[in-house]
Image (cartoon, rainbow, N blue to C red; front, side, top):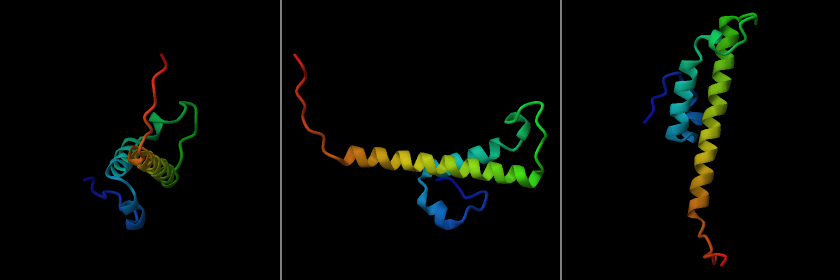
Length: 87
């Protein structure tokens, strides 16, 4: 189980799947150096602004992974009709 390393509010943290939590932690950590994600000629953001961008990107990724896992689980739980194969 992924630990809440970056102090995400518990309401959101508890809604995410373990994969979503892991994605948040990993993406937030990987995005530490903004030069890896911005154009070489771009003006660098202040540290506070970049932390917000990292946070938002990691949050959206965690939400997306959680929604996808929940949709797959829901679809897998729906009985599928037996379909005849075309001859």
